[in-house]
Image (cartoon, rainbow over all chains, first blue to last red; front, side):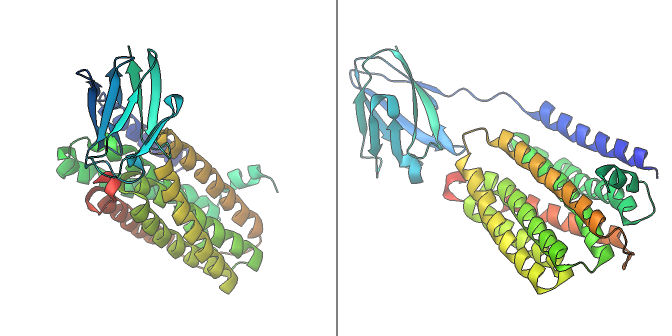
Length: 123
Length: 227
């Protein structure tokens, strides 16, 4: 077999594999939660090695009470919103994280190491 | 002696003339195994291609790029100390890092690192032994370091462009391996081939690596983060 034929066959294998992967991928699922009540209670879980849901909708000026359920483990239990000065290690699901978003806007939240991330949208 | 001579030699009658065939046979073996497993088993697993597809694909390509190195080292058999140390270090580091990165991205740092260290150290020892104890030691050290670093990097990037980084890591690792093939050619251009029969060896190793990686990713144990 000539080298040009081998290179062409390698190219076909690589491009074929790439196309298969590209065509097989489906859209990501929606994961948004809206805080409710006078005290807006939200529960976060861990799914696919990240927080779930990853988009939290709350009202500005109203207190938020956030719970990390038992599926959340490791450094993900150390919840941080740098722009709001929120940084708390919730050892168990009973320990809630309380804060109030002063102004409408979009805020990034993450674990203390920045591995799990998401967005808090205040309206 | 430029890189162009090396490219020309890929069409020649020396060991380098068989390197592209090694890559092709390795890719064919990996893809045949993955295609069969996908048809009979993996297509029934939910979100299979999103979760594992890219990493299995890159693992197959990475193993294919490691095969020309095995081919050259097995064929020439004996190297000088300097070359052997470089070969042991590069083989151990790149094999360990890539394997560990891909498995770390799907199973967590512990399992990724252990798997990467096993692959990196084994390959580092085998490749480095072509010059004696110095290359042997270099292979162990590099496999150990590469194995640990790959899994750690994957976990640190879990939610920060992990798939893009996997492609970058593969491209950089691949470029280093091609450069090493050139270095071996440069160092051994006056030497004669010592051993035959590399293709069967390469097909066997590729099949073993692909099956081990696939089993670990899909059915193997995983860290708490992925359970």
